[in-house]
Image 1 (cartoon, helix red, strand yellow):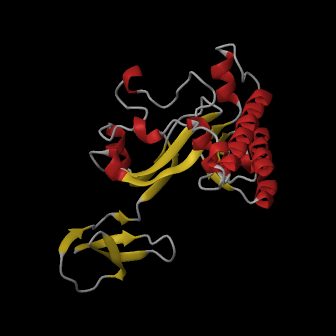
Image 2 (cartoon, helix red, strand yellow):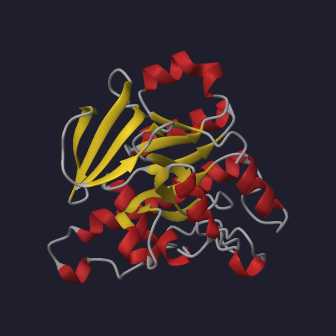
Length: 269
Protein backbone atom coordinates (compact mmCIF):
# COMPACT_ATOMS: atom_id res chain seq x y z
CA UNK A 1 0.00 0.00 0.00
CA UNK A 2 1.11 3.59 -0.74
CA UNK A 3 0.33 6.23 1.89
CA UNK A 4 0.48 9.95 1.08
CA UNK A 5 0.65 12.04 4.26
CA UNK A 6 0.95 15.62 5.49
CA UNK A 7 -0.26 17.36 2.33
CA UNK A 8 -3.24 19.65 1.80
CA UNK A 9 -5.73 17.20 0.29
CA UNK A 10 -8.29 18.63 -2.12
CA UNK A 11 -11.10 16.09 -2.52
CA UNK A 12 -13.02 18.07 -5.19
CA UNK A 13 -16.30 16.95 -3.58
CA UNK A 14 -15.96 18.36 -0.05
CA UNK A 15 -13.83 20.44 2.26
CA UNK A 16 -10.05 20.52 1.96
CA UNK A 17 -8.23 18.29 4.44
CA UNK A 18 -5.12 19.93 6.00
CA UNK A 19 -2.44 17.35 6.81
CA UNK A 20 -4.65 14.75 5.17
CA UNK A 21 -3.93 11.20 4.15
CA UNK A 22 -4.54 9.29 0.92
CA UNK A 23 -4.09 5.52 0.74
CA UNK A 24 -3.67 3.61 -2.51
CA UNK A 25 -3.83 -0.18 -2.68
CA UNK A 26 -3.52 -2.28 -5.83
CA UNK A 27 -3.83 0.84 -7.95
CA UNK A 28 -7.06 2.00 -6.27
CA UNK A 29 -7.64 4.83 -3.80
CA UNK A 30 -9.01 3.16 -0.67
CA UNK A 31 -8.99 6.04 1.82
CA UNK A 32 -9.07 9.84 1.81
CA UNK A 33 -9.30 11.61 5.15
CA UNK A 34 -7.48 12.75 8.27
CA UNK A 35 -4.15 11.18 9.12
CA UNK A 36 -4.43 7.72 10.67
CA UNK A 37 -2.26 4.72 11.44
CA UNK A 38 -1.56 2.52 8.41
CA UNK A 39 1.25 0.31 7.14
CA UNK A 40 2.83 0.82 3.76
CA UNK A 41 5.22 2.92 1.70
CA UNK A 42 4.92 6.49 2.97
CA UNK A 43 5.21 9.54 0.72
CA UNK A 44 5.68 12.74 2.74
CA UNK A 45 3.69 15.49 1.00
CA UNK A 46 4.55 18.25 3.48
CA UNK A 47 4.15 21.61 1.76
CA UNK A 48 2.37 20.04 -1.22
CA UNK A 49 -1.19 20.05 -2.51
CA UNK A 50 -2.64 16.59 -3.18
CA UNK A 51 -5.37 16.42 -5.84
CA UNK A 52 -6.93 13.80 -8.08
CA UNK A 53 -5.31 13.44 -11.50
CA UNK A 54 -6.50 16.04 -14.01
CA UNK A 55 -8.27 15.01 -17.23
CA UNK A 56 -7.63 16.98 -20.41
CA UNK A 57 -10.85 16.48 -22.35
CA UNK A 58 -9.59 18.00 -25.61
CA UNK A 59 -6.00 17.95 -26.81
CA UNK A 60 -3.68 16.59 -29.49
CA UNK A 61 -0.92 15.27 -27.24
CA UNK A 62 1.31 12.73 -28.95
CA UNK A 63 0.07 13.67 -32.43
CA UNK A 64 1.99 16.96 -32.60
CA UNK A 65 5.42 16.20 -31.16
CA UNK A 66 7.09 18.87 -29.07
CA UNK A 67 10.61 18.92 -30.50
CA UNK A 68 10.20 17.93 -34.13
CA UNK A 69 8.77 19.54 -37.26
CA UNK A 70 6.86 17.95 -40.12
CA UNK A 71 8.17 14.47 -39.37
CA UNK A 72 6.39 14.48 -36.00
CA UNK A 73 3.30 16.45 -37.00
CA UNK A 74 0.49 13.95 -37.54
CA UNK A 75 -2.63 15.72 -36.32
CA UNK A 76 -4.29 16.70 -39.61
CA UNK A 77 -4.73 14.71 -42.82
CA UNK A 78 -5.22 17.80 -44.99
CA UNK A 79 -5.87 16.01 -48.26
CA UNK A 80 -9.61 15.39 -47.88
CA UNK A 81 -12.15 17.40 -45.85
CA UNK A 82 -13.99 14.26 -44.71
CA UNK A 83 -11.81 11.60 -43.05
CA UNK A 84 -13.86 9.83 -40.35
CA UNK A 85 -11.85 6.64 -40.84
CA UNK A 86 -8.69 8.29 -39.44
CA UNK A 87 -7.89 7.05 -35.92
CA UNK A 88 -5.99 9.27 -33.51
CA UNK A 89 -4.45 6.25 -31.80
CA UNK A 90 -2.42 5.50 -34.94
CA UNK A 91 -0.49 8.78 -34.71
CA UNK A 92 0.33 8.90 -30.99
CA UNK A 93 3.99 8.74 -29.98
CA UNK A 94 4.12 7.79 -26.26
CA UNK A 95 7.75 8.95 -26.14
CA UNK A 96 6.78 12.52 -27.02
CA UNK A 97 8.09 14.68 -24.16
CA UNK A 98 4.66 16.32 -23.95
CA UNK A 99 3.47 13.30 -21.97
CA UNK A 100 6.11 13.90 -19.31
CA UNK A 101 5.24 17.60 -19.19
CA UNK A 102 1.56 16.73 -18.81
CA UNK A 103 2.25 14.35 -15.94
CA UNK A 104 4.36 16.98 -14.19
CA UNK A 105 1.40 19.33 -14.52
CA UNK A 106 -0.91 16.81 -12.89
CA UNK A 107 -2.63 15.54 -16.06
CA UNK A 108 -3.05 11.78 -15.77
CA UNK A 109 -5.63 11.25 -18.53
CA UNK A 110 -5.87 12.86 -21.96
CA UNK A 111 -8.52 12.71 -24.66
CA UNK A 112 -6.48 13.21 -27.80
CA UNK A 113 -6.98 12.97 -31.54
CA UNK A 114 -7.06 14.74 -34.91
CA UNK A 115 -6.96 18.49 -35.30
CA UNK A 116 -9.60 20.73 -36.83
CA UNK A 117 -8.48 21.06 -40.45
CA UNK A 118 -11.24 18.78 -41.70
CA UNK A 119 -15.02 18.90 -41.46
CA UNK A 120 -14.77 15.37 -40.08
CA UNK A 121 -11.29 14.52 -38.85
CA UNK A 122 -11.42 11.06 -37.30
CA UNK A 123 -11.67 9.49 -33.87
CA UNK A 124 -10.31 10.59 -30.51
CA UNK A 125 -8.98 8.18 -27.88
CA UNK A 126 -8.78 8.49 -24.09
CA UNK A 127 -5.35 7.50 -22.76
CA UNK A 128 -3.31 7.57 -19.58
CA UNK A 129 -0.28 9.83 -19.87
CA UNK A 130 2.24 7.13 -18.92
CA UNK A 131 3.38 4.14 -20.94
CA UNK A 132 5.75 2.94 -23.63
CA UNK A 133 3.13 1.49 -26.00
CA UNK A 134 -0.06 3.41 -26.74
CA UNK A 135 -2.11 0.21 -26.73
CA UNK A 136 -1.31 -0.19 -23.02
CA UNK A 137 -2.30 3.42 -22.28
CA UNK A 138 -5.82 3.24 -23.72
CA UNK A 139 -8.83 3.79 -21.47
CA UNK A 140 -11.39 3.91 -24.29
CA UNK A 141 -11.04 3.91 -28.07
CA UNK A 142 -12.85 5.46 -29.82
CA UNK A 143 -14.26 8.02 -27.44
CA UNK A 144 -15.50 10.62 -29.96
CA UNK A 145 -15.55 11.61 -33.63
CA UNK A 146 -13.90 14.95 -34.40
CA UNK A 147 -15.89 17.52 -36.35
CA UNK A 148 -14.92 21.13 -37.05
CA UNK A 149 -16.85 24.29 -37.83
CA UNK A 150 -15.85 27.81 -38.72
CA UNK A 151 -12.44 29.16 -39.56
CA UNK A 152 -10.20 26.10 -39.72
CA UNK A 153 -11.81 24.00 -42.50
CA UNK A 154 -12.44 27.25 -44.40
CA UNK A 155 -8.79 28.29 -44.22
CA UNK A 156 -7.34 24.90 -45.14
CA UNK A 157 -9.57 24.15 -48.13
CA UNK A 158 -9.90 27.68 -49.46
CA UNK A 159 -6.12 27.52 -49.88
CA UNK A 160 -6.66 24.40 -51.99
CA UNK A 161 -9.51 26.04 -53.97
CA UNK A 162 -11.94 23.32 -53.01
CA UNK A 163 -15.01 22.87 -50.85
CA UNK A 164 -15.49 23.92 -48.10
CA UNK A 165 -14.37 27.51 -48.40
CA UNK A 166 -17.41 28.85 -46.52
CA UNK A 167 -19.32 27.98 -43.37
CA UNK A 168 -22.20 26.90 -45.62
CA UNK A 169 -19.90 24.45 -47.35
CA UNK A 170 -18.74 22.96 -44.06
CA UNK A 171 -22.32 22.43 -42.88
CA UNK A 172 -23.36 21.01 -46.26
CA UNK A 173 -20.54 18.46 -46.29
CA UNK A 174 -21.29 17.34 -42.75
CA UNK A 175 -24.98 16.91 -43.55
CA UNK A 176 -24.15 14.99 -46.72
CA UNK A 177 -21.93 12.50 -44.91
CA UNK A 178 -24.20 12.09 -41.91
CA UNK A 179 -27.05 11.32 -44.33
CA UNK A 180 -24.89 8.78 -46.14
CA UNK A 181 -23.85 7.21 -42.83
CA UNK A 182 -27.49 7.00 -41.70
CA UNK A 183 -28.53 5.24 -44.90
CA UNK A 184 -25.50 2.93 -44.72
CA UNK A 185 -26.32 2.03 -41.13
CA UNK A 186 -29.95 1.26 -42.02
CA UNK A 187 -28.90 -1.03 -44.86
CA UNK A 188 -26.56 -2.93 -42.54
CA UNK A 189 -29.68 -4.06 -40.65
CA UNK A 190 -31.31 -5.72 -43.67
CA UNK A 191 -32.07 -9.40 -43.14
CA UNK A 192 -31.11 -10.21 -46.72
CA UNK A 193 -27.31 -10.13 -46.60
CA UNK A 194 -27.13 -9.76 -50.36
CA UNK A 195 -28.78 -6.35 -50.03
CA UNK A 196 -26.40 -5.08 -47.38
CA UNK A 197 -23.84 -2.50 -48.57
CA UNK A 198 -20.22 -3.29 -49.26
CA UNK A 199 -17.85 -2.19 -46.53
CA UNK A 200 -17.06 1.52 -46.66
CA UNK A 201 -14.37 2.67 -44.22
CA UNK A 202 -15.63 6.25 -43.98
CA UNK A 203 -19.29 5.40 -43.55
CA UNK A 204 -18.58 2.53 -41.18
CA UNK A 205 -16.64 4.86 -38.87
CA UNK A 206 -19.25 7.62 -39.05
CA UNK A 207 -22.09 5.14 -38.44
CA UNK A 208 -20.89 4.87 -34.83
CA UNK A 209 -22.02 8.50 -34.39
CA UNK A 210 -25.39 7.75 -35.98
CA UNK A 211 -25.90 4.81 -33.60
CA UNK A 212 -25.09 6.98 -30.60
CA UNK A 213 -22.03 4.94 -29.66
CA UNK A 214 -19.78 8.02 -29.67
CA UNK A 215 -20.51 11.76 -29.81
CA UNK A 216 -19.50 14.24 -32.47
CA UNK A 217 -16.70 16.29 -30.87
CA UNK A 218 -17.44 19.67 -32.42
CA UNK A 219 -14.71 22.31 -32.72
CA UNK A 220 -16.65 25.58 -32.57
CA UNK A 221 -15.44 29.01 -31.41
CA UNK A 222 -17.97 31.58 -32.63
CA UNK A 223 -21.52 31.57 -31.30
CA UNK A 224 -22.97 31.06 -34.80
CA UNK A 225 -20.73 28.01 -35.33
CA UNK A 226 -21.82 26.62 -31.97
CA UNK A 227 -25.47 26.85 -32.98
CA UNK A 228 -24.79 25.37 -36.41
CA UNK A 229 -23.27 22.33 -34.74
CA UNK A 230 -26.29 22.01 -32.44
CA UNK A 231 -28.70 22.45 -35.37
CA UNK A 232 -27.10 19.61 -37.32
CA UNK A 233 -26.90 17.38 -34.25
CA UNK A 234 -30.65 17.84 -33.78
CA UNK A 235 -31.37 17.12 -37.43
CA UNK A 236 -29.66 13.75 -37.24
CA UNK A 237 -30.40 13.01 -33.57
CA UNK A 238 -26.74 12.54 -32.69
CA UNK A 239 -24.90 13.31 -29.47
CA UNK A 240 -22.48 16.22 -29.51
CA UNK A 241 -19.96 18.02 -27.31
CA UNK A 242 -19.19 21.69 -27.86
CA UNK A 243 -15.40 21.93 -27.82
CA UNK A 244 -13.59 25.26 -27.32
CA UNK A 245 -16.99 27.04 -27.10
CA UNK A 246 -15.09 30.34 -26.98
CA UNK A 247 -18.15 32.58 -27.38
CA UNK A 248 -20.31 30.31 -25.26
CA UNK A 249 -20.44 32.94 -22.51
CA UNK A 250 -22.23 35.29 -24.92
CA UNK A 251 -25.09 32.81 -25.32
CA UNK A 252 -24.86 30.95 -22.02
CA UNK A 253 -28.58 31.11 -21.23
CA UNK A 254 -29.51 29.64 -24.59
CA UNK A 255 -26.85 26.94 -24.35
CA UNK A 256 -28.13 25.96 -20.91
CA UNK A 257 -31.55 25.34 -22.46
CA UNK A 258 -30.01 23.23 -25.23
CA UNK A 259 -28.45 20.96 -22.61
CA UNK A 260 -25.35 20.07 -24.61
CA UNK A 261 -22.05 19.34 -22.89
CA UNK A 262 -19.38 22.02 -23.34
CA UNK A 263 -15.62 21.56 -23.10
CA UNK A 264 -14.46 25.15 -22.69
CA UNK A 265 -11.00 25.77 -24.14
CA UNK A 266 -8.41 25.86 -25.45
CA UNK A 267 -9.69 29.35 -26.19
CA UNK A 268 -8.02 29.86 -29.55
CA UNK A 269 -6.82 26.31 -30.35
